[in-house]
Length: 298
Ligand code: GRG
Image 1 (cartoon, helix red, strand yellow):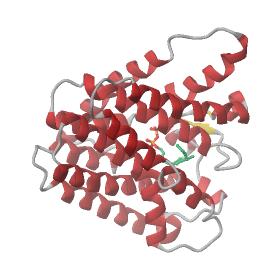
Image 2 (cartoon, protein in one colour):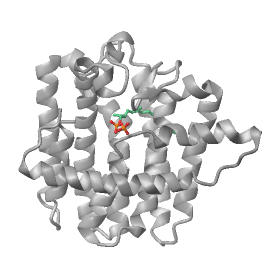
Image 3 (cartoon, helix red, strand yellow):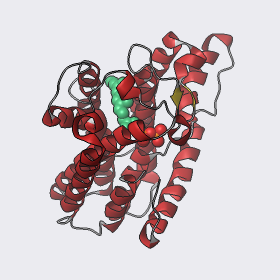
């Protein structure tokens, strides 16, 4: 449940406004449909999960950071949306029977239940390729940096490794440090990419980029702990995804490791550290601080 106080009402409005802008741009990517029978299902699978009602946190974070440095959001909108495509593709893969075996995503049937496993795998991979194509089409000298960072962060040393660690931790005892590392790889990396996208395109200094990166690292871990708490405490109607998935899969998470109160405490601690990283940033970072407060309550 989101606790809305006076401050977070403004943040909530910010998130709603930016979500609309992101949703519109995402929809525009799937407007030109190829009606030939051969590719219909593949194209439909690309847009299906992407256009379901996600929170769009990663693109919004990229935009929020960019707006700390510049006003026009044109330059950041496509890179920000490319991140959402990578995220959607990774969710589709994560839901497959060979991974999390999930039935529900964003309140609707998971992709493989609608299109089948093979089409879903091809669609996920195509979404990642599409993301790089979108980046490649942005005319800006800084795009090279974004492409390099993205390939470093989502491959076998980043997101894919995080998922691998997550899958193969099943049934094995893990320490909090190991769990934190896998959360960083599984969840923080896309948050880190988001703030780096925003900072680089906005012209942030190297020092600011480092601080933003730390902010996003802690925020991502907090967000994943929150996901564990949701998994343990909410019904599928409340969360829009399967409940108690980690318990069913015998997967260790912050709640099973530390208990509910311990997980809440670890979550707040990560939020505190995220906000601490903002302290020395050369710009007004109130919005980022409020976003982290709000995200900790999703
Ligand atoms: C891209 C090469 C490559 C591999 C992908 C499958 C995989 C490797 C990674 C999956 C990692 C994963 C599923 C992490 C969970 C992250 C998470 C907390 C998802 C939920 O995010 P929200 O709450 O969801 O932002 P919405 O639906 O709002 O977007």
